[in-house]
Length: 76
Image (cartoon, one colour):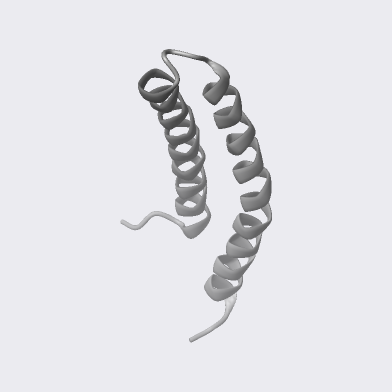
């Protein structure tokens, strides 16, 4: 039994989004705690980076989805 390709893409998309959120927020909190004496200002920059990464990667993920779906449809 194999998982269909669109489902795999959606799983990858969710994983990518959650990993990006976790990484941006965790790194910004650690920078605030370790280098800025517990300041929340780096957290604000982390949220800005999170939004920028998510917005910029959305187009690339759509291209990947089209590429994957076109490979699945083409006969080999």
